[in-house]
Length: 454
Image (cartoon, rainbow, N blue to C red; front, side, top):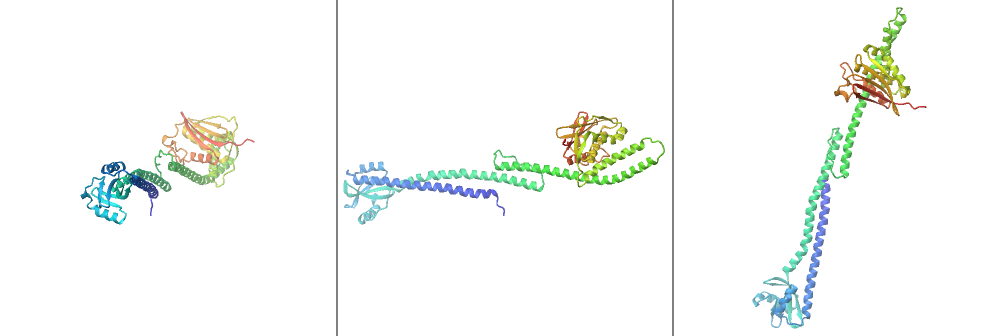
């Protein structure tokens, strides 16, 4: 059975608040009642003490003045005549008809008289004697209605404060727990969607900078990072698949190319006619194919080829030499800037040569007949770059952001593995591939860490 967190928070907090507020309110009520009762008793005792010491005659006028001053009423009872002589209530003999039996019995027997019912209401009674009239009994009457009013005056302020406090606290507590519950529910839903692998739309952060806001921000960051990792894993899986596929095809190509190269070399050795250079071009093309195949095979090996210091300029020259028949065939002009710094990179020669060849071949295709390709070596403090530029139209906008992904190409007969292989080579060497469009030129830069100088 599910127990909502709002209920888990609300019930204990409400119970605690009700207990505290009600306890404080009733404690204040009890204290006020006790204090009011003590004050009433003290005032009545003072009046009794005054009467006991009074030596003036207790006439009706005197009793009325004492009643106005003290808030009590007085009846002077004459036991000898068994009737009252004076009163502050303005009573007539008929008014005491019902009370006389009760008065007589109490005064005759000496039993305490607690209350007395009169036409004006019910009164608490205290009997005493005055020093000025020792033969009479003076009854001090306290109205029960006035006592009840005094007690109510003592009760209602703490009850009103306690009730008002609850009226303010309960809605506030409901709002607070509802807000907590809603925000925690949003967090739970986001985490559940993340666990299912679904994209989430993060809840807007609360303006309050509390722990829940920080948790929601961390969940949004975690979701974004997980998606980045998913994309990275997907890209790595694609690159691994490309390497495996390429290595499988390259293995077959190498066997066929080796057979063709051997047959051509045998033909050249046996041929007696003057050579026209076509066989040299064929042999060079086979060497180019063999270099690319070796580079692709190096990606598919489970154990990485050992890295060694390589002269970047020399590696670029080797690539140009292998690609020279394609350059002549397409009428491509190559602007080659020698590397004055003689930079060395750390890498596997076969895979780096295959990557540079792929960049140059892509540039040749992009530049088109009679186009221009520029080759250069760039350096920074830690790396060197094989820079290949062409003055072709550049990649279409719809694939520009995915240019290095496997099987992404704008060529009708292309496979889309060239730049993917270059990217994998860069990653395997701890480098990276950058590209940009500079005016009419497309620039590709393969950055590889430089070798440490001895």
